[in-house]
Image 1 (cartoon, rainbow, N blue to C red):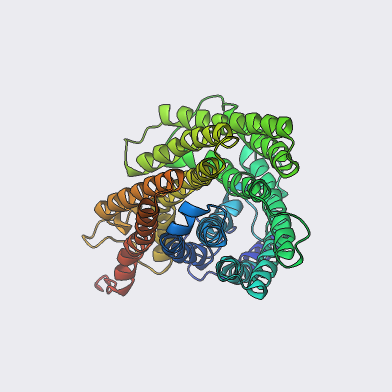
Image 2: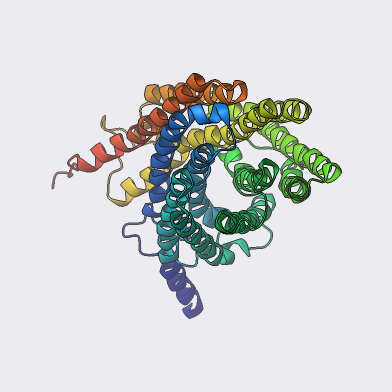
Length: 451
């Protein structure tokens, strides 16, 4: 009994105090302010990314590898996507592993460091001011170090299957992305080597697939059964194949691109494609076995999945075109990277309409709010407006289509329109998810009459 009490105290100390934690919620789950701070910052990052693409639209048509374009891409990948994925990681790693984070204070320090790094790095690149780039790189490296220290205990859990395996690889991919980035940041001042397009692409492949993509592939294996109400008999192997093949493919593709070894890069591309295809096969199994009726979340997830073959086709055409028409090939590569980011962004926004209401519901219950405005029991679906959620889907999808089209065809107007729609998506989603919970918190709590 004494040992059990001490373990419980250690769990509370590691996860941080959450007064009024609802009964039944696992003690490993961190306070709502931890994931929500990352997700709110991700919305601001998406606004900045959209504005940056609109600003860099002319430069993107002229030189898709220019500093202004790289800055816009980094705002999307760091300040929007990585920030949002970090929020999801802090929420779901304890749930998946059934082990708490080492410290909520480390989580908050990670947030502050990543917030500074994810903004300073792209802004410094866009302004061509190297001290700001270096400060951003240092803060980003610090944030990743804090993340590894905080997650290592939870990800040491054994017997948790493909999700934990994939998250371990993803954390290693995040570290590899940082190592690439630090070398590139140092080179911007030292000019030790030619930071050519294929060298930058080697870095982008690691960040996009071995960190961001692999995190989604791993976490989805836990979320899809829950959100689709899908019971898959005799757990299928596609998820396990995906979490091994994606990092293996990146481990071949990225060095192949970096060193210009075409056979190695081609082998890596094939292995990576097989891993992503396994991810899509896993999705198809869960969709076939779902017991939930088709809804907006399913539309988000299926649209997200569609961006993967779009990106693959763009990348394949770029590899064929590049030799004879370098500018057109480079533009197609930029569009392929944008399509890959679209896969993740569409999935992230779609899952927000499940994840944020879940977090908000728990927080409201912890404050004694358990009834919807009509007096019925409070449900997740009561915490946002479904019409505006559909509007968010339209804005995001049209924005991604316009951005990819503008980059692929070197059309500044389409690229700017895509950026504008992405910038508009973030406040629509954010306000929609925040407004109803805020109203419920302000509403007076009904007190039962004393007999």
